[in-house]
Length: 72
Image (cartoon, rainbow, N blue to C red; front, side, top):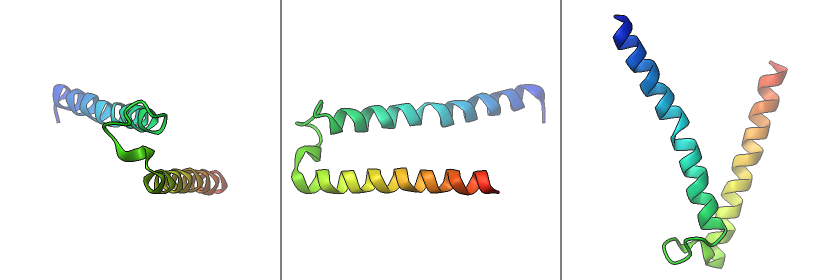
């Protein structure tokens, strides 16, 4: 593998990992705070309930994964 190919792969991988995270957090944050109420149905009580459940589940899962990694 040439150096240019490896550097291109490393740069593309870094962008693919770094960019989506902040974008997803921004979009979900704006939707949850009511910034885009007309565009996203987050303000509906049923949708908000499931949004909160999914967010809580993700946070609990991340905490458990972190605890498991630290013990290993």
